[in-house]
Image 1: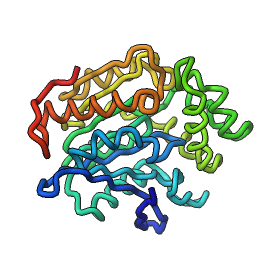
Image 2: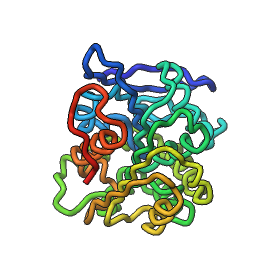
Image 3: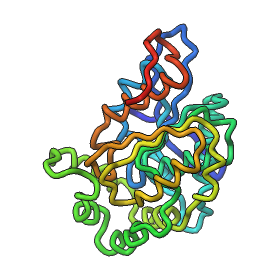
Image 4: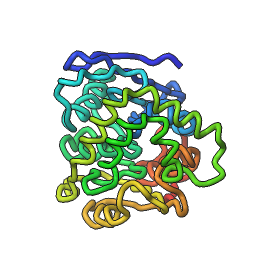
Length: 280
C-alpha cells in the first residue's frame, strides 16, 4: 500500500495510512494506531481487516520509521514532538478525538497524548507498554545497536520478542521492517524512551484504558504494569500468558479481537449492531 504523507510543523515529511471499510452511511469513529520502536505502520497489517470494518483506522509511521523521514541529528527531539506528530495528523484528518492503540513505544506516545490532551483521546489501548523505560534494560541496547547494527541486535535478542518455534519467515520480515530505520536515530529514539518515567502522572489518564500485558515480558518491568493498574482509574487488564514482549506481532488477530471487544463493551459497536461483550 502506498502511504499518504503530510509535513509536520517542523518541516519533516511523515507517512500514514487510512483504512476505512465501515458502512458508507455510518459516521465511523477514528482508531489511531501507533507502532513500536524499530517498527512501522505495516506491522499492524493483520489487525486492519478486523478493525477497519468498524472504525476508520489511521496508522502513522513514527518519525524516523517506515516511510517517514528521519529527522536531522541536531533537530529538537522529545516526547512533545512525538505527541505533536500524532496531534497534527489528527488535525489534518479533522479528527477531534480518537481511540488510540499503542504498541510498546507507540503506547508511550499514546499515554502522553492522553495525559496532556485528554479531550483528544476517547480511549487508550496499550500493548506491552509501560510508563517509560527508565531503569529498564533498554539503555543497554544503544551501544549494542551502534556496535553490531540493528539486524544482529534483533537476532541476538529474538527470544525476548518471540516464542521458540516462531515461523522464521515472520522473524525475517520483522527484522526487515526494523532495518528501514537509521541505527543512529534508533539509538536516539531508544535513548529518549529509556530516560523517561511518568509513573507519577498515570492518574492523569482519565479515559477508559485497556492494558494488555505480555505474560513473559522481557523488556519493561512487570512491576510497572502493577503501578498502572493501581494508578489509572478506569483500566481493564488482560495478560497474554507465556508470550514475550512483541505480542502485537506474535498474536495480531488476538490483539485485534481484544481491541474490538473492549471498545464494544465500553462504547457499543459504531457501525454494525453486534451484541456488546466484555473482553475476556
